[in-house]
Amino acid sequence: MWIKWIIAAVLTASLLWLSINYVYSRHQTRKVFADLQALEQQQQDLNTEWGRLQLEKSTLVGNNRIESVAKEQLGMRLPASEQIIVIKR
Image 1 (spheres, helix red, strand yellow):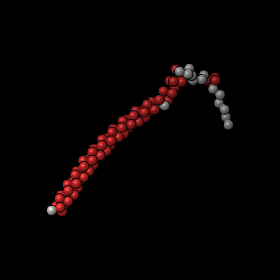
Image 2 (tube, one colour):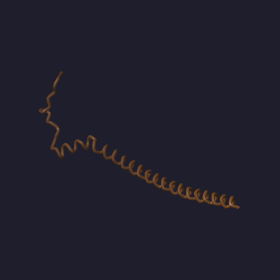
Image 3 (cartoon, one colour):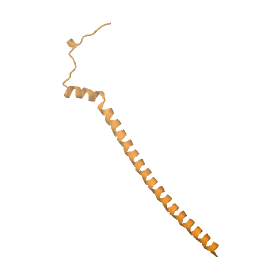
Image 4 (cartoon, one colour):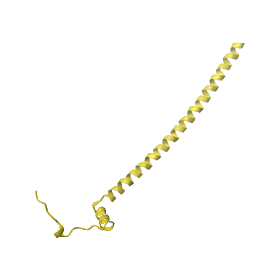
């Protein structure tokens, strides 16, 4: 008679332990999936920012942009033809 009670107690404890493990693993899986989605969103945001920065860089280093900044902000201008000196080798 005691054997049946011991077997029932062991099976009940095993079932309880397996149930708790199952719930814990499902919770961990959902947590990892949520973290993955957050990281994928961050990656997408960073890719968008990278594209925007590449476009801004190409705009800022263009010859027309450099020339206009040199003229407007630095007061530079092209030299007159009499100011140009050609050095021959």
